[in-house]
Length: 257
Image (cartoon, rainbow, N blue to C red; front, side):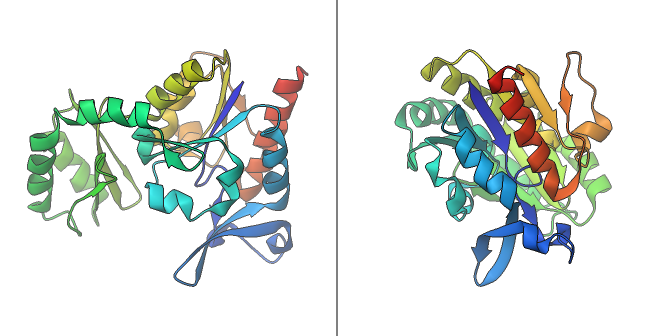
């Protein structure tokens, strides 16, 4: 069994989710340039490592490799998926089989990548120059989400790209680079027949749809905006302690309860 879990706002949370009542129930798990960035509940921190002894816990994130490795907590996981499925790490090193597969896909995007970046940089809704995340997809920011979405609809070829806006963050990603494709690859590699997935945002949607069981925190936009055709588990809690309920559900599943 594989438990594939998104990180930000699913397993780890920023300080805005903390208050005086819960600050002694969480642990700091990410620091950047002396600033406290992310926290996990103490229960989730302990139990997730225990679950990893029973099933394959696979962190799945749109974060770059560098951003992911700032979080020491998940080093016990044999596999991790970063760059929105563009990279698979095995024991903290890039898995060459998957990297070679992705590089073949990217050969068809080299000229297109630069063209999209140049076009986006010309738009008045973009507030920072486009960058490539691990060479796999385009990232930028906007200060006008509504207008930026309109621009993306006009200038992005949706037959070959996926795009989304999360807050101010703008992602333009080759269609073949997805969390679900990376998970399917690992499912075959590890010879596992069941996937449980947890996530909260639009970029987790494809991963949750291919899972046998999906778990959504109620604060996530997926719970609020999207419907599924198959039975899904929905966490009772929202906020930072929804991770605890996700883990309790996973434990029930692998115990056969």
